[in-house]
Image 1 (tube, rainbow, N blue to C red):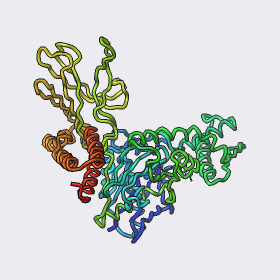
Image 2: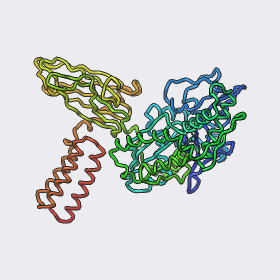
Image 3: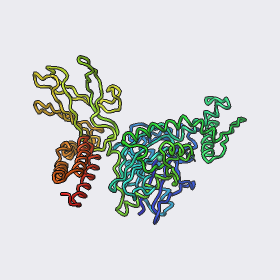
Image 4: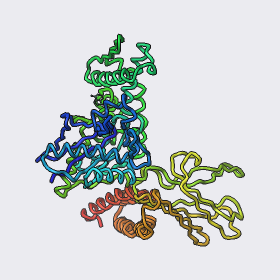
Length: 561
Ligand code: ADP
Ligand code: MG
């Protein structure tokens, strides 16, 4: 039986399968491979999915729902007439339509699928996607991150270690991901984006330019006229993207859009693409030159201004020889085929990364007697690979301090009041505690959204624990205990972990038996490894440890010891 590859998109969805030696997209009843992710109900109470529903979006807004992917896994309700649906329900209707198209095309029943989801989807959103598939009669063999699927479609999983950036501009979302192929595992190492920037915004500026040029007022247009204007603006956008001249005619008003004019009115939107790209590079601690390959996906990247922006900004010509709105669906089908052959690419998904910074409320001493309250001190930085455990030391701020209140926050602002408070812990200090008494705070975080906070008063050794769950009640008490046990290894500082101590001891042994330049070289290697250890960043430790091992093996092989 064929396992389907599905891109369940915010604007458009696709289904593909593996046919002998390549991924192939499956057309719907209209012969299109893109099915708009829009659901509606007609006057007879019949469901409409895809193109027809999309056409009724402006004319029947109360009976049509779109862009529901934004609210996957939330309680939000959508009303179609008197029927009430969740985003999961609506997604299941789209998936069911794709499944039926595939079954008709392939002439067999299909019950299994690989479905792509945004890299930043958390466990709740991923679970909602699996539930939607279940409601549609599909078992999810695997969820795959959209950027990973795109990379697979380009065969990047067949390359050795490489670093790539995937730029995805869909209908209403802009996602930048940096991926690393390392030791046969694809890892999303950073993501950034703008959830409210996409191809639709370019259509909107065309509509605004038309209204300005003609003096027409949006509020005065009939629903039908607006629907026609929207459709023409959308067409004009695609025509200028292919180097033609766009044309909009509404009543006796005629308007033409040239490539130059489109470029000019799009500038403010193009400028907004920069910041998330810079952010992703910064989080991954990379320079533009470190990105070896760029992949453009999402229908909106078909606009030549996007490609030329990306090339100029990053100094490299991006790949986009696969149709950018089809890349993710094709990649999902490749993963489905790999899975059937038991070779599927292992992926470090973004639930393997902490999406927001976690830290505590602290007081900062500005001068001898001046303190600033409400300062956010990060303990686990965003985009850190998880599971992770990090420790920071804090100190009492005055003599005879009797308690320490630790408030836990999530967010990126240096000011705690702009961040989200997750919980708090109060610890009694022993009598006569002086200023500058040391308190160790350890945060341990895993991919189920389980955050364990341990606070240790160093003078007495007393430890207090606080557990914060992202989705309380998801884990039973025994599961929670099991999970915490699994993490216990991590709570040992990497410098105390036996494998790291052994490696350093080995390096030191070779150092002792070497002389001169070799010694300096080994010293340098050890220093790099120790720096990684002190950063407590598992990924850097892994890289530096591999490097040190290789170099030591070389030295030993050359008979240095
Ligand atoms: P999503 O990932 O949100 O489901 P898609 O990747 O299908 O979205 O992208 C949809 C967006 O791409 C729409 O805004 C659409 O107007 C735009 N788009 C599709 N084809 C073109 C084209 N030839 N030129 C410009 N924009 C296009
Ligand atoms: Mg998409």
